[in-house]
Length: 254
Image (cartoon, rainbow, N blue to C red; front, side):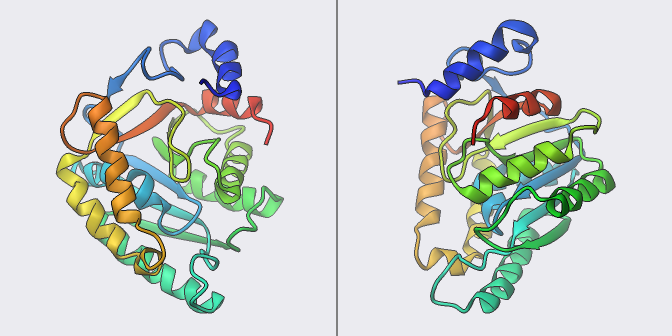
């Protein structure tokens, strides 16, 4: 059954000028991403492992093609494992993020240090992200999809959409973490970089203590590969221009 929200988005967006740039139902229009041509790539990660889970294989391919990559960690991840004190876990997760980034080939790390599970679109959070985007001037931004079912992931979108209101156009690639994408229009074969992604994810040891992210993430990648005609590992995205992504956001009722 098609999500009613997705029906609404489809009815409002597809009939006009979006058919050439975005398709909310992958069975209608699918494109394999060839070239990975953007040279300045920004990743918004609500927590210090979301960049690896959502798009780590694709980021590794961008690195191999000479792109400069910046990961922005929106929260400090202090709620990620109850075995640790919160301040201790913040320090641990920053170290884990730095090691994972080195494996993938991420060039710059930005920690905005908002409290985990308390992220919201305040004036200060919007201003902080806007400054990062202006300074880096990305050609592509990867971020969790608008409907990714975690409050910090949805808040990341609210902050992002407020920050980009008056910025020039760039490409957005929405990924799924807590919620598989309801549909996608870009497919990236990450078979050659899946081992690197797995190695990077293992650096997030504090998160693997409680959840089998390695098995879950690789299994989902195998599934996406199978349903798109591949035989290895695949990451998928819903991609569109930043102005159109804002239009998607305007249709949401969080």
